[in-house]
Length: 99
Image (tube, rainbow, N blue to C red; front, side):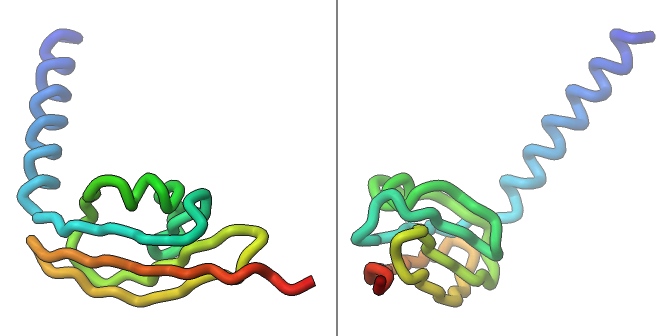
């Protein structure tokens, strides 16, 4: 019984993964003068700007609010729409906070 459930779970997992891939993808890249700044899509952190600059990374097609944030700099905000198979490049020049 346990082995049957494990097999069904595994099959569902792979079928679920296949459906995610069939939804499509879009290339997303960030160029930022502060490599350690954090990239957020719709307030969800994706990692540092340097991770999204060196190589093309993929996101699902759609509309996004992008924020590039670092505690010592003013944040950069941008709205993007990417189509299936399309691409988006966000260029952010962060400026230091005034003291």
